[in-house]
Image (tube, rainbow, N blue to C red):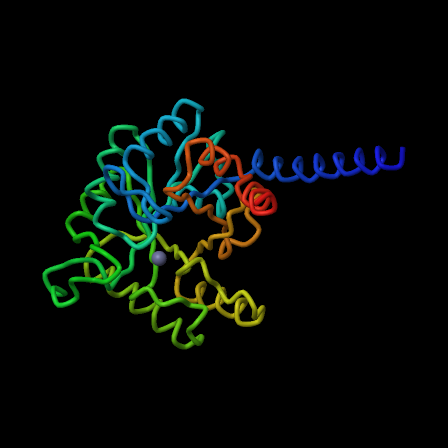
Length: 276
Ligand SMILES: [Zn+2]
């Protein structure tokens, strides 16, 4: 009898926990985070293939999701402008060239909006040929960024040379923010006042430094910043400098992508690691 009661209590607790998480999804904004978009069977943690992406875009379109831009989220956060009924935000970090060659044609085909966070110093232009080859991969050209910015892509910044802000002092972060902004201006790439933390890192262990970093962001014209936590933030967003994103891995089958969009991937990953 006692075991039955413990069992039922356990189930009720799990159900209550899931419900709280579900409500965070139903009233929340899933922000997906990608890196490289590859072709063929070249998928891994960082690489999602165009074949996988087609299925994911089809799923979003068929199920009534609307992809939004950084500027839509800004208007929502700052002016309380309503978001569409099932909003989802697609973000890509670093600014790889394959975002132009492999992703952009699919954005047009499926009418999907995306937001790319650029590493300012890595963008290819006639004046930085000395940078290539870059050990992280090949990065997009200025004219490719400009072409995408005409319709389905908005840009945000992702530092000057991909150094984690968790490893930099506050004055160093400020220098990086300024250099990044200046370089993007110099290249003429339209960029939203928005930053994605490198490796999703944001001074996790030091609350004071983190608060000071948010302040620094504000002083340098930033109005939104994203981390990677694999949660879905509830709306309205509590802290615009601490918005959650969900990493989409090329190792996800389609059903795991759906779990990620619903906002349950962190719970699912935990259950999976317990069961191993
Ligand atoms: Zn990155």
